[in-house]
Length: 269
Ligand code: KIV
Image (cartoon, rainbow, N blue to C red; front, side, top):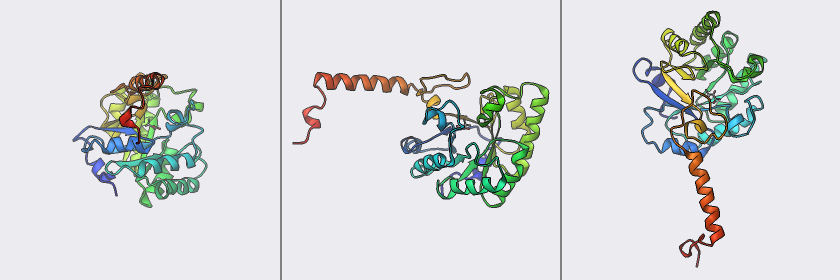
């Protein structure tokens, strides 16, 4: 069992803002654990954004349940302290609740996740209820839901007009009543991020949803400056690891070409 649980996370509501981050591999999980104190980082997500960050696709749609199980296992072997949740990928829960239930079990039993995240409002309520009844913590996801990128015509900010904002608030309350322990709200105006956070008693985790949500989440590569492609407006790079990696590669190549690597101390006698 990891240290952070849904109850501890819920207890942060109104008391402390927290950060969360995506993670897809063991090396990154070890860096998170190396923080020592994870009181400000209680939750880690194996997001289906790995379709872009790890697989090079332009959306999460090609990500399969097997991919999610594999990456969740990689993180789960190393992560000890924050709660670990994994995304239900596109197609793993939309057809029927039976599919959704069975597939969520795989992320817990095979993947080693402590809970799952899925996208959608009212239509997911019965599945969420079943999962929660069976003891599987569920995090909802509303607003810009990347698995709906075909229907949305791309990755577009949602909830901009009053009707859409009301619908999102309505869905958020339904997800809370269905038993979600937290809710991700992505790509909505800051005022709506604030309104959802104020309307719910579970923690609302924002990404591109303004400064007034209970928590924030960023994609690992965006947060550490490893994303050399398009960086969304809401993402801030808190380190420049991409630049450092390129510098490291250049320096290594030069050392090999000059014959200064390996040095005598780096050779076996
Ligand atoms: O897949 C993902 O990484 C996500 C977060 C960005 C919220 O859903």
